[in-house]
Figure 1 (tube, rainbow, N blue to C red):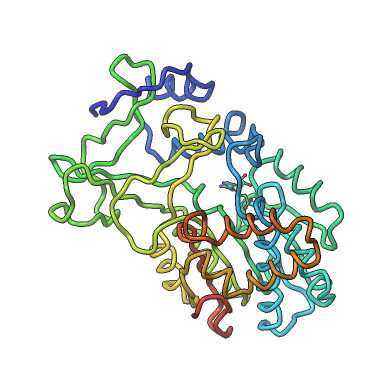
Figure 2: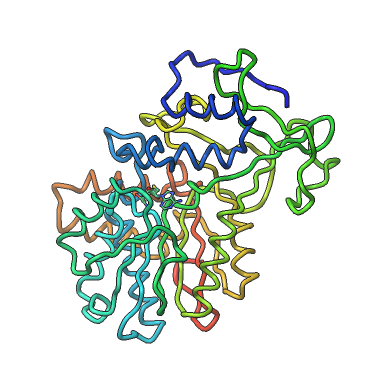
Length: 373
Ligand code: SAH
């Protein structure tokens, strides 16, 4: 193992960095995936466990936090999917990683007039953070459907399912491999030369063949290849669940359409990028979602897949412009704010291009709206 680049930031180590440094000192480097899991989900110091990340005072904002239209259009999409399922007497409405519960509150408000949908919905929120569960519970207290919580998607109850995951897959831990002189080597989190701070190192031996890395000759020296096993596993689990139970899942995240090289691990703190190893537990840490890989994982389990398409195209096809016009007519005093919010979620220079939408369905359902021009 050779330490690569030392770090430039001078901030004191976070409590989680101190723990990781002493762990690595005794046991050796850890994978980027283990680092990411601890940085986000460590029971005491994990970012989502200990902090309130969202909104102007937090570290980042998400589409439902920016514009109510996002959740309203998804609510209409889910109502349509409910009818495509034949309006069953009960179905599982499942959200993965609901954050502050804003998206689900908007979905349920938008679907509120559809009495058959509301009375059939059994709501499960998959959330690891006790603090966020509390916030979700408060925000949904007035909603027509009472939530239950699960730790993992695979704990969700059986029954026809409508599943939504916005900015959830990007939290799932990736592994990174780098093309070095000797071939592909896994990038690991080790210690800098002084042995005091975290730094990227490389495994001394090649990765196992089942990682299926691209041939070394096709990659320039220094190229980074990312593999997201938990994301592919989850996409496969969703597909299996839908095949057995029928239903549809909408996966929305920032990511790329086709596989390629690149280090996409990024940390965001107080709305600014920060070095990914600099403040574990204090910064949000994400990686771009490899939509090609998760689409194939779902297809391999017999689900049908639509997309991925860009978020902007998806929202416009679902009627963003008409919804915005109606809202502005009903609330002229909020027209500027509503218009700015709609642009931020749909325009190419904001979230419209970089965010992608993938729909996974049981094969019996018709094609979903929003995916074909
Ligand atoms: N969907 C929300 C929030 C996205 S942030 C929105 O659009 O605003 C990610 C959410 O996923 C948080 O609620 C976080 O606590 C949760 N989360 C991240 N990793 C998780 C995991 N492995 N298991 C369960 N929940 C997780």
